[in-house]
Amino acid sequence: MKKKFVIAVDGPAASGKSTTAKGLAKKLEYVYIDTGAMYRACGLYALNKNIPLSDLEALKSMLETIDIKIEYSNSGNKIFLNGEDVTNRIREEEITKISSEIAVIGIVRKKMVELQRKMGENGGVILDGRDIGTVVFPNADFKFFMSASVQVRATRRWEELKARGVEISYEEVEKELIWRDKNDSTREISPLRKADDAILIDTSNLSIEEQVEFLYNYIIENMEKK
Ligand code: CDP
Image (cartoon, rainbow, N blue to C red):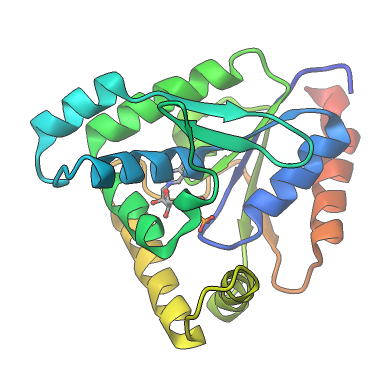
C-alpha cells in the first residue's frame, strides 16, 4: 500500500473494532491507534491521583502533566502512562467503567482528540474508537462502523474476561456493556454515532478473518477513487 490513508473504525463496546483494526493494520503495514486505551489511561490516572471526576480544576492540571505513549509493535501495542506500562491494568473492569465516565468530560476529550490528530497527521494509520469518523478525522479516507447484537458482544467480552482469569457472570458483563453503550451514545460531546458516510458492518455472524478481509477488500477496491 503506497498511499498513507487515515482509516477510522468506530462502534460500540466489544463490536470487534480493535481486533479488526489490529489485523488490518498488520496487513496494510499501518500503525494501529487504540483511542479507547487513551481514555482508559486518563481514567486510571484520575483514580491513581484520587481526583473526583467532578473536580474540573484538578482534572485540568492532571491533563497538563499526563503523558500517554503508545509503543507500536506487531506482537501488540503497549501503552504507557507517565512512563509506566499500563497495558494490562487499563483492561480491568474498574477502569473500563471509569473510562466511559471520564470520556464525557469536555476538557478530557479536547486533549485526547488533540493527541490523536497529532498521532495520525501523517496518515498510514487506523484509529478505532467512538468519534473517529465524526470528530477526530471527519475527513478520514475510509470510515467503518462496526456493530453486533448485545448478546454477541457481551458473549465476546465475557469470554475474553474468562480467558484472562476474571471471575464474572455473563449477566454482569451484559449489564455493564448496556450501561456503557447508553452512557457513550447519550453524552453531549462527541457521542458514539455512525458518521453518515461510514460503511456499516454487522459483525454478529462474521469471524475476525472475515471482518479483516471485508475492510481490506473494500479499501483495495476503492483506493483509486481517493
Ligand atoms: O474495547 P471497548 O470497546 O470495550 O472499549 P474502548 O474502546 O477501550 O473504550 C473505553 C471507553 O472509552 C468507551 O466506553 C468510551 O466511553 C471511551 N471512548 C471514547 O469516548 N471515545 C473514543 N474515541 C474511544 C473510547
